[in-house]
Image 1 (tube, rainbow, N blue to C red):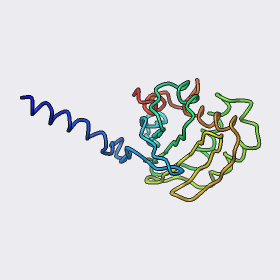
Image 2 (image 1 turned 180 degrees about the vertical axis):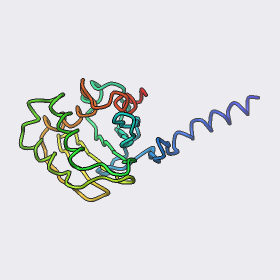
Image 3 (image 1 turned 120 degrees about the vertical axis):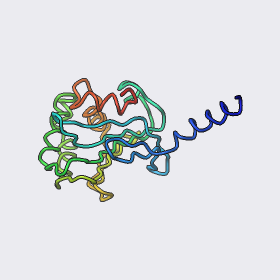
Image 4 (image 1 turned 180 degrees about the horizontal axis):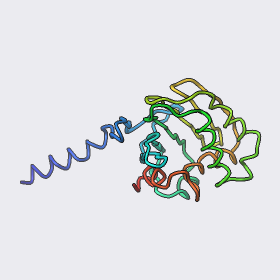
Length: 184
């Protein structure tokens, strides 16, 4: 019986290295960013009404479970949006990001860097597309769409505001926030 318990424990521990399936999206347990390995903190589904729009995943250097811990964490962060809906028009994403900035960071919302961030999203998104938003400890924000660089800037206040789109007091989707913080 003891051998079975040890084997079961090993199996449970090793299963954490495998990808997680969320709404048909294979969510990787780790990603490499700036020569660092980030670990999946949590994942969830962004829904609009009853429609699944994308799977959101948060990767961090250290586990966080609250927005305060996330904002205080000095490590690299990655938000991955894996689209599952057939087509999301770019205007809808920009509108959602604008709303998130306005609701959670109204002063930063009107900065030149926030406007630049919003201007990066010039294409519609279709099922299978991936958008990665990187936030570095020095306040550098960069984004890619299917691996293509969309833009970069360095502004710690706007970097915080970008995180608050998902993790602020008024996120677009509370369930997604909980899931990405590992509380879902």
